[in-house]
Length: 73
Image (cartoon, rainbow, N blue to C red; front, side, top):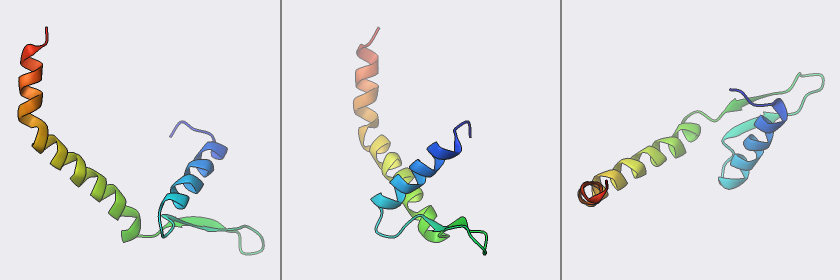
């Protein structure tokens, strides 16, 4: 993904803090090895909701954008 390991974990922590249920389950290392995994449907839900909101916004503002772009050079 073109980012450092540290940056990726900081982003995971930040996302987990924003949601009521963590998007990524984190298990610390040790004898069991640790690891991380997505929470299945919960991990897809915010992404799907964001896409749906974006689509609704584009649909709602389509005419205004068309009017505005006709006025631009």
